[in-house]
Structure formats: C-alpha cells, structure tokens
Image (cartoon, rainbow, N blue to C red; front, side, top):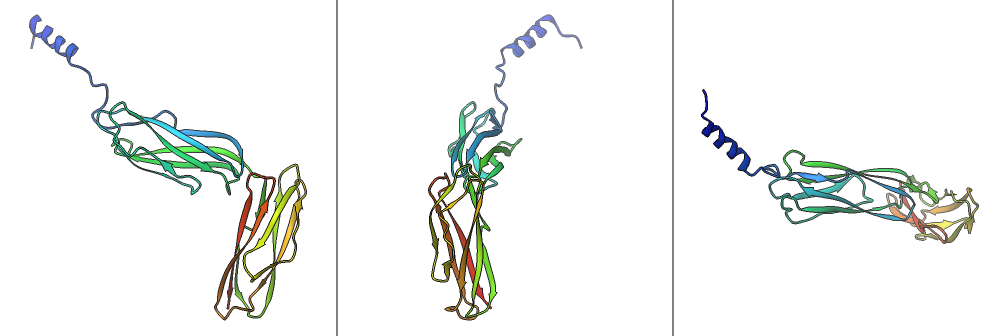
Amino acid sequence: MRYSPAAMLACTCLLLFTPPKAFGASPAIRFQESVFTFQPILEGESVDIAFEFSNGGGEPLVIHDAVTSCGCTTADYPSYHLRPGQSGKIKTTFKSTGHGGENDIVLLVKSNDPVAPVKKLRIRGKVIRQWQARPDRFILTNLKPNRRYTRRLKINNFMDESLQIRELVAGNPHLRLLSNPTSVAPNGDEVIDFEVSVKDLEAGGIAQSSVRIEVANAVKKSVEIPVLVKLK
C-alpha cells in the first residue's frame, strides 16, 4: 500500500508532536549508589549512612519496608508516596559495638516497583577492636547442689597502650570475683577468675547473673558477660 505525501506528513507530525513519556508507566526506584563503604572506625563508634534514591517511573513510588541483616542497624525511610522524579533517602546508623573486624551488612528495600520490588544495598567497612573479653557468655548446667565452681574470663588488649580497668562487678551473690586486675599490658591479656556458688539454689533452680567490665581509655567503655547457672 502506498501513502500519499499528505498522509505521510500527517504521520510524521503525529510522531513529532506526541509528547514522549519521560518516565515509564510504573514506579521505578533508582539508587545513586548501592554500596556504602565507611572508613575504619574504633569499636564503640557509630556511622550515619544515607542511601539517596529517586522515582524514575511514571507512577507514585511507595517504600513498604527497609530491613537489615544485622541488629546493629535499623533503617528509616520515607512514609509518603514519592511522585515521579521525586527523590528521598534511606537512613540508617551502624553501631559498631560487638562487630569488630570486616563488616558486610545487607539492607533490603521493599517497594511497589514491579520490576525490582526488593533492592539490595550493602554497608561495608572495618571496625578496629581495641579490647575484648572472652568467652562472651557462660552457660553452666547440671551443677550439683552445695558446691562451688570456678570459671575463668580473659581480657585481651589489642592497643599499643595499657588498658585501664576502671571497675569489675559481679552481678549477684552467686558470683564472687577471685582476681581483680586494674590494667592489661599493651597487646597483652589478663585473666579474671570468679567463683560460682549454688548453695542457695534448689534442685532444678536457675540463677542468672553477669560479670561487668568497665574500662577508662577505650571507645567501647564496658562489656557485660552473662552467666547462667542451673542445678540438676
């Protein structure tokens, strides 16, 4: 079929003067960056993080949820609908206590984008641990009545200066500290011995306590080691 010059001109004009859609027909979430890498920090410090995004679609964008793979972060996100072209931020704070070493945290953002209903973001960075106490908990079961038991807790100092111990506290009368160091040598360790008494517990009884360590010259100021005791 051949078209007349007038018909071809009409079609050309229709194509030229039909306004193109700047956006797609559906909402579309577009992040500027999907990975946030922070510089090394000392354990105990926090990092504020913001992922910027925009709605690159043609319908309102709704963020349903933003969840992380780690309890060290919680995320805030816009609760309103974002119009086409409008931007927003997913904000979170990484709290480094208990997360020494290399960190790689996943943040999942759920929206009404039909193409990418779940977007994966990552938070990466190194946390320098100045000191630690090990083990991080004691679970003592099947203990016999009217007995005393001793356990050992070790403090490691990774700094090039002495770690100053400000206070050691046993959580309740079931625990008694047998050693009480006041400092830990540079790049060294110290041992805390403590006694567990179950004389006041009945058969099957359970007692929960802890050993709390407070230091004076580190970013992470304290740690609490849970101690659970159970008789037969």
